Image (cartoon, rainbow, N blue to C red; front, side):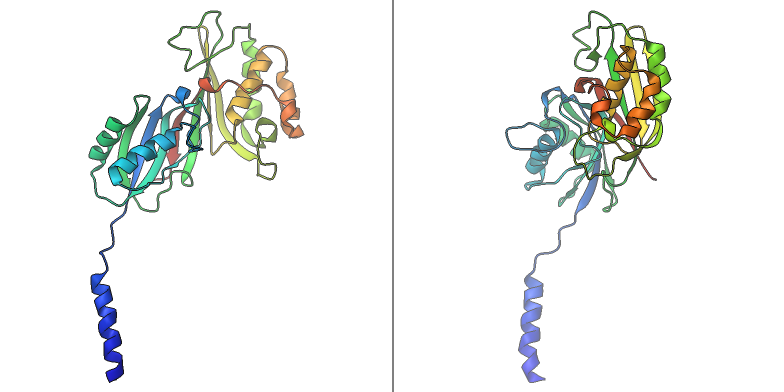
Length: 269
């Protein structure tokens, strides 16, 4: 027994000298940004300015260490957001309101934290999202206001709006959207679009699409195809065959990024 005492004493000494565990808090934020000057959401090489890298830069100032920021959607270059959701874990205690003010005071003017809250440590903005809503705006008049040009694509051509409306129903439902995306050929391309609507106000056309998740360029490729329908290049009745072909070359153009805005991300209670 005597030979065990030194071991136990040393073990206790080491435990006593260990630093206390740091409490880690999980924060959920709602991010609004004008994506015009950014190469999308996701951090890339240092020479590319992204929304994620800007938020991470500011969090490093606040927390004195590198913080990983996880978002619900990896928006493309030039795409905007009103309801982007993200989360991150901080090893410091700070009230959400104070953190929100600190972030906004250090972020550039075209990125704002609209809301900040403490959430369960297991919450993940990407994997726990259940529904996303995007809005795509296009202006079909001849002269577009410079105050709208950053947020709406300019399509100065006559458009058959009735044909465009007739095509919408073909995109709704659970389908293989290979013809409307690009990227990893091995990735599962089956997605569910819950609703797709089109609203016309004078010369502005707004599409609102809601789904469980979306593939890269999927919304912009769908809208671009609808624009081609409006220009008479594709007929509404062709959409089922284009979807069945699972061939990107069969669908229409990719609509410009500036018309797309991530509006809202939903989560289970």
